[in-house]
Length: 112
Length: 115
Image (cartoon, rainbow over all chains, first blue to last red; front, top):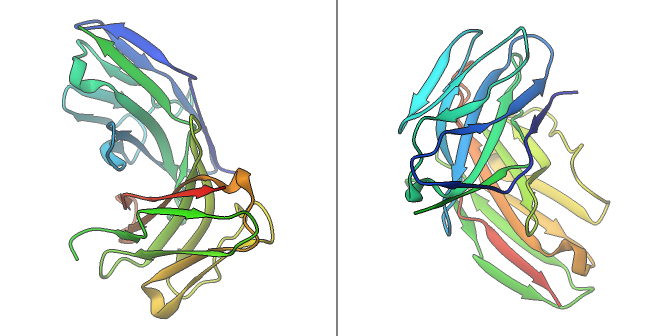
């Protein structure tokens, strides 16, 4: 079946550090891939997405590239801020329906 | 409304009681999802409705859980004979089926506490 695996947290970084959160997926065909973010006390919201191989999604300084050959969609940011502290979820939507599946989430804490 | 609305926002119930959680999706969204988020855990898929198709119930953890979606809009998640391990935040999301650019919009969730 379709599934997403992302690196376990929690991840703690200092401000301005480089961030990578790994995400790999299993799916038939070419799914769409997403990163969602859940800030403290708030609901989940879409951060970025990519719908085909080699696409790069980007938003708020975050980037992720859809890698078909490695079935990955790693999230990166060159310089994190305290305000980036949140839980990040990788997700996929299969090519033939919209049955979204999420990874377990990775909690990021950025310290000043 | 402008977003996905869930009610109640908080629910405390006694073990063994039944509870109903409600989700009002964004108008026009044909896909609706229920997830469960336990403390310190990720999102656990429960059930997925898409238009008039039979729902994907593969994530429901036991036969105490059921969900329905009336008229293709409002959905109710029912938990019968609640147990303490049912305590979690129950999240609802909806999306507009537009091919590969589907974005799911989430409600604020219902925090269920079984005492």
